[in-house]
Length: 81
Image (tube, rainbow, N blue to C red; front, top):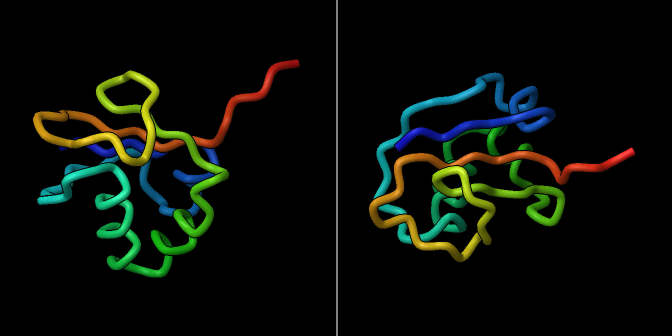
């Protein structure tokens, strides 16, 4: 699946997107796998309360199942102004 990173998440990981092979059942499981890769992922995902996720371009929760999903995107909360 494609995993996309936006704003400071992209800056911390150093990539805007990547293809990921995973057996993760949920978004939270995917995050756990990514955190084990390298310190930069662990740092980027250290505080999930400061992150939002979209699954196939729909806002989702971290307990969202990944079966059949083609794209997961991580980004900070949006603010207006």
